Image (cartoon, rainbow, N blue to C red):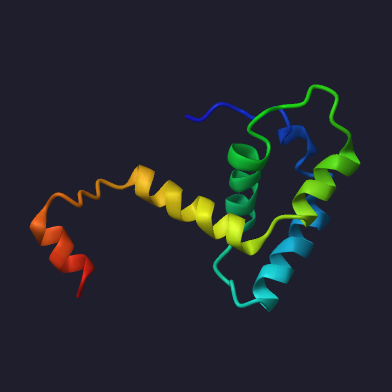
Length: 98
């Protein structure tokens, strides 16, 4: 089980900002982004270094400033980290190049 993030207590307060950012992603054609996926990006990437005295407006600013490209890059890297993908295997290269 994953350790709780220091900013998790803000989650319900910033839900409208999360919903707004998800709507923006959907307008740009990224319909598969979920609230939990966005929160995961924020806690693992954007808020990797916890500020002890962070304010609510800073959390909301961080959410609203997320760029689609940053989220997609993070998600791609996480998929590679969690997958047993081996580019030394010739069969996997052939599968990749199909």
